[in-house]
Length: 230
Ligand SMILES: *Cc1c(COP(=O)(O)O)cnc(C)c1O
Image (cartoon, rainbow, N blue to C red):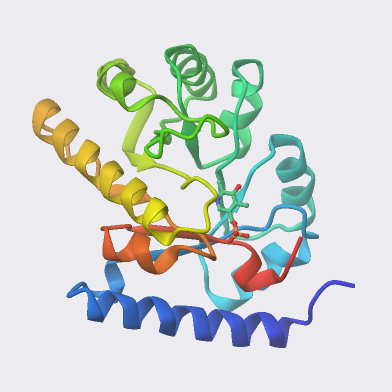
């Protein structure tokens, strides 16, 4: 049984308040942080709820799952891919997503650029950086980030909006905080070096969004906090 819309609405209201309070306490404007509902593993109704509430985009971590869901949930939503993407699925991703947040290799950049070109579209991307140096996580090593920025900036069919990271699972909240601070430092260095803004910092999920906002997140990706456990 999937949750009722009313419960979703209450959770979204509360979450937006929590985000706004965290922003204000950190001296930031609540408008600087976007909440991305993560609909993975939930039915197409999850996307409908998001649209009905007024969200403009949802996040999915699997290409095939998103394609099926999107076909049942028409509307003005934008779909963002937040899960690992293999180069052989770049074409599908370029067709079915407005933005890919999980770009972590030159091979994938090349494949997405080609696929976006074939679609005649400019595809927005984020570079996923393993800013917590977590062996269990996808994402490029911080040492390879500059190489990837250089590569993506040379692609006519890709637009790089910024960086994304996932903090390592840990009981110590400082681990997540350090990961987020590290991503922001990496972004600031790359932005200065390449003369681009890399404005978007997609970091923070249900369990660690306060620390992420305090460290400069512009997008928190929340599944459990809106739709319940998976
Ligand atoms: C599932 C997922 C989320 C949401 O996680 P919750 O803890 O359920 O909020 C965020 N980001 C990515 C990359 C995910 O795969």
